[in-house]
Structure formats: structure tokens, C-alpha cells
Amino acid sequence: MIDTSGYVVQDTHMKTKTNSKPATATPGPWTVGVYVENDYEPAYFPVERDERDASGFVKDVVPLIAKVTYGANDEAKLANAKLLCAAPDLLAACRHLLAFFKSEYPEAFKAGGGSFATDDRAPFELDLAAAKAAIKKATK
Image 1: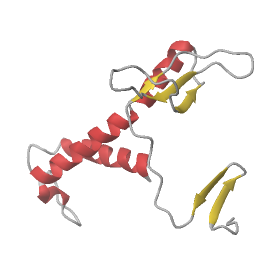
Image 2 (image 1 turned 90 degrees about the vertical axis):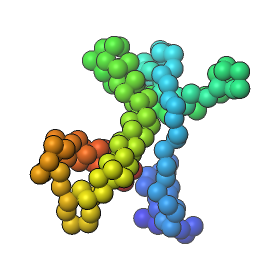
Image 3 (image 1 turned 90 degrees about the horizontal axis):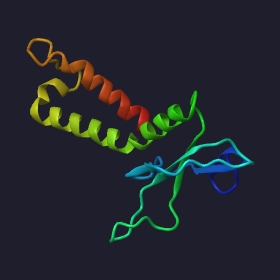
């Protein structure tokens, strides 16, 4: 549904501009905050933007990215939060990996084909396909 201001209403709390670029994620680094337990919501590990001042101290207000509430136990919740915190770094690593291979082996990235199948780099094809798929999943 599009309202009169040109926004697409996805639910009662969220609108996105129809002619805008896709949103970009909060840049890293991200960190796991202090475990939160209270009476009015499920216990969670906060995933926060790691914001420090010039002297290395964490700022008073840290942007919350996510609340990790799911896991079989607290250790699993923490593991999920740590994996989420690694997302910006993993995305950057995938992008650098693809950029390296594109610059070093442009023949394998030509439109309509190109392959490592005839040489010793063939095992990398599945890894590169996985990196491309991860980038697409994170950005599309």
C-alpha cells in the first residue's frame, strides 16, 4: 500500500520511500553488550554499535542494533549474538575476496561464463559462489 506521501507502508510502524535507494546497514564494528534481564521482556544479549570516543571510552548512548533472545540456553544466545556482531566484518571479507579474484583472474568473471575448471583454482569456484550468495543475501 502506498500512502499519500509516496511511502510504501509495510506495517503500522514502518514506511520506506518508494523512490529511495535500498537502505544500508549500520556500519561496524558491532559488539555484544551486557546481558539484560528484567520483568517486562525476555532476557537478551544486546547487539550494539561499538561507539567509542577518541580516548577509547564507550559513549553513554550506544545504538541498539538487535536483541538476541533466541537460543537453547544463554551460551547459545551469546553465540548467536557474536555471530550477528561479525556480520559487517564477514560482509567486508566476502567483498574483498571477490574483488581480489576479479582483479587476479578476470577471465573467470567474464559475462556468460569463465571458469577455473581447467586448472588448480577449481576448488575456489564453490567458495566464490558462496561469497557471492552471502553478499546478495546481506544486501538485496
